[in-house]
Image (cartoon, rainbow, N blue to C red; front, side):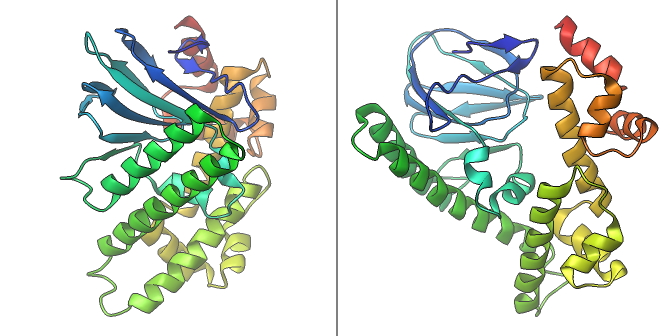
Length: 291
């Protein structure tokens, strides 16, 4: 169920210190397009379920698991009868681990765990969901710690699979350099962690390349190879995402939003925001408020 919906932005009321919400949904109710900053995981218990992301309709069969990344616009369609578990948790739970925020940037918007598509991840994700459901429903001593540890276990495996796939994409270009691949990936992950913590500051390509230990030109090439975007595209994506949150949830002026998102000037903010979203910050805010 969606409790707090402002336009298309859902504010999740976690209601406890863990920053996590789980409920057994048996309602024959569809949910319109919405997004939230939390990560969402869905597992049908009885019957099927439909999740729509853009033009793609995902059919979740009983026992399959779907993970929806933070900030992804999606809608849900329920069958006449059935039950599904919906787990939502604050992504900040994982940010205390320095590699996790970068993992969420690498992850696709949606991961659909089925035996056919994900023979490695599916049984693992299914078991972890069952553990979380049991702990959340029974609430024995230290259940919060057990749930947190279970989520970390799951995301560690997801992270390893996702990063391995990214390396395999570059296999032809870097054949025979497996050790160097791992070294480079570790460097880029550390750099992304640094960007995630300092994107609101005046970061430059030269400064960030210096942290990596690479020359500016080598860093530029390696970063693009592993992240599928340039350093400035990654930096601006962090800043624009922060600006979107401020435009949704505050009454800050556009200038204040720009400054609090790490942009050096209002013109740079307007230009970058429009290149990402196809509209100005003011148009974006007005469009959202009208929904």
